[in-house]
Image: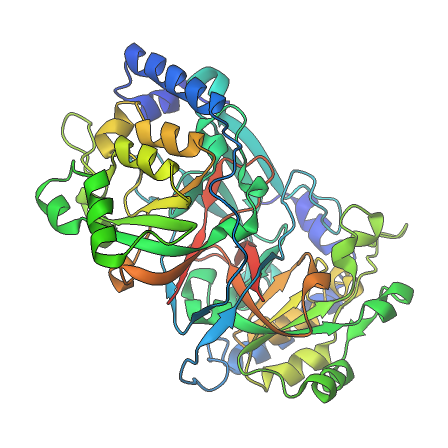
Length: 277
Length: 277
């Protein structure tokens, strides 16, 4: 199915140790219940909004990937000039563009995108802004302290929320900084800290989101360690990556609508992410 | 790009006359302004909801198409057993599963999916139920009279709404009736009537939706005429097809969130369609 070239591309710097660590972490995550529901159900309360924002980058051939792989292509199948209608065919790797991750992405048998209840896709947003720090340190991560500071300023995380990292990377799509690839092939982009993933997995939090290409930092991703992916998706929750337009969001009060694909067995996929504010 | 086989598959029964008619209709539609905005902008008002419904069918290899063509395939690229993560690659024709149509689908240069303002994707639903009539006559269509009856019962169509046809076909995904293909290769499924499309194009209506595979009736679709596609998409609006779960919707009061793809130049695509009720 997949050539050694693309395997290498994904795992560029992966060490044998990294693989072993992943296996253990993943086994533990599965043992803890990859399909476990997150948090206690609460009776639905009326929610309201006035404005609609798009948190989605356009997807196109050449949308950045950490190693430059082309994960989306489009070919014309019918054209208006010839057949009087336009239809294209896409070839798409699930984890490109603004896209979601399902638990199945990093578990043996966690929920695929089609198995997640739709009610988990319409949730309050808690936006944690680490963009100032990230500007000076692209390897920084969203720590438990950042969440505690957010709560000190905004009150407890809303029940069943999505915690979104605003690292400022959503502004960098057209810049080499977006992938942060250095001469040695490492990627310098912010992400969640593994301790934060573990902390949030103990709370009623439905999802986490980032404006970078990975829930993990670029360094952890390229090293093949993926501690946040294993901890968070392994706990049965979803993630969303490469969010756009985060500066338009308030720290609190917006509602995220994750318009992810409903592909049977899908591990994730390009999504339309909308905020109701 | 496309073999004669699949062209034939799409246009099975298309006559030369059908092609000519389409060209004329399309030219007229483009002349009328395929990029024209629909309706007058209104200041945003607070909207509220309590529940979340999924109007999306799962997408899978073998999702029905009118002629049996396979428009979605998925292959495993990485597996948890081998690489400790799961990633799939999809090949997808834009117009399969629960999916949207952009104006570009049936115009020379109308808006593609990424060019439609996101505010047009969060709109009130006016659901017109013709399921009882369709049960006896699968070639029936949603007529201007049906819209007038809806308005007599529910008041004027909400500003900037999506008019959704409930033909009962959303219940038939697992039945041969879903494609309605007869021995002669014709398809018997309900759709909008062309006159309804023209009537709604004069109103502040953002989109139309169906629970069948085509905005047009199956017969019009397979004949290659597509009068509703040309009239409606040609007026610069969007459509959504193969909606699920419509019996859970009220006739009025729900909000549709069209989580369509944001692919640059996309003519449509598999979408997550959510109702806020």
